[in-house]
Amino acid sequence: MDAAEVEFLAEKELVTIIPNFSLDKIYLIGGDLGPFNPGLPVEVPLWLAINLKQRQKCRLLPPEWMDVEKLEKIRDHERKEETFTPMPSPYYMELTKLLLNHASDNIPKADEIRTLVKDMWDTRIAKLRVSADSFVRQQEAHAKLDNLTLMEINTSGTFLTQALNHMYKLRTNLQPSESTQSQDF
Amino acid sequence: MSEAYFRVESGALGPEENSLSLDDTLMSHEKLPVRTETAMPRLGAFFLERTADTDNAVPRGSKLELPSWLAKGLFDNKRRILSVELPKIYQEGWRTVFSADADMVDLHKMGPHFYGFGSQLLHFDSPENADISQSLLQTFIGLNIATLLHRRSLTIC
Image 1 (cartoon, rainbow over the protein chains, first blue to last red):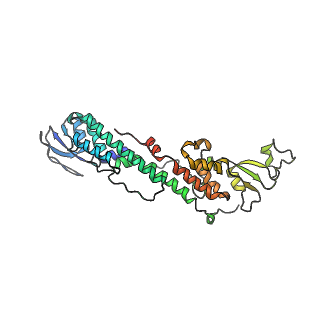
Image 2 (cartoon, rainbow over the protein chains, first blue to last red):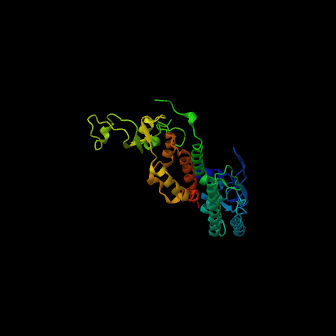
Image 3 (tube, chains in turn green, yellow):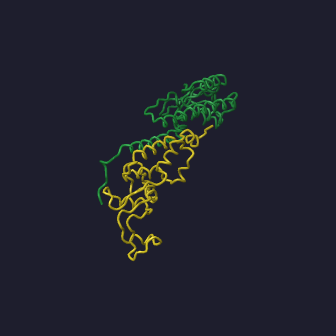
């Protein structure tokens, strides 16, 4: 899975917007949206919110976890703990990136939020690397990692499974395989 | 619309290499030091500087370097034709170096197919087979997975 696919899945998350147009309720395959009235907040999926914002038809409201004090608390909690702590949203990285790229004027203290989220991301990725390293070094059979988001798993997943495959094949060489000798010439 | 070319995975780490895999073919070109147990007629044509016989035979007991595909084909359990010696990096001295610190050695320079070639070496029934396979595994584990992951990770923000 590459990063673009994970971002695509993240765009299904709901965010609140304030439209400046009016539209009756629309019926999509995934669900119903609307009705849209100017000045009244409504919840829509992220893909629609970004699209409307780009066409200047709405104003985006930041999610309630996208606030400097709350993110600071989460970041400090993440740094203290050795395991992974629960994140405010399973797609926190993608939401932050998309909202801050397209709607930073609607989000207060956008730069600080960007730095805080990047700190959280770096801490978690470092923990993931250390964990993968000790997994291979000690040849453990089973690892359990809670509270990881899909984007984080995606960065190291393919490489880790290939490394583990390699290790498995080398390990089976330890048992001599006299029974599978090839045919005589 | 199907693709024209499907890459065949290397089987070198497993019991047998894949004859269709390009990686395995390149790997089997690596040379193995070998001692002949019997005279080989006409093989001396490739080693003209060493033999002076009229029919270009390689005498018994001479040391040669053969690519591993040739050595494997000629090797026989009753050892009538060849006896294979281990290349330097799979021997005792280098094995201790690897167990001490695998990070410092440039494996690629030692021979680009360290693991695959080493796994195929186990077929030659050397008395040190158990140690070789253990050393291959330990070297791999000793790789610093953390730094490798870092180089491959994407920064999104």
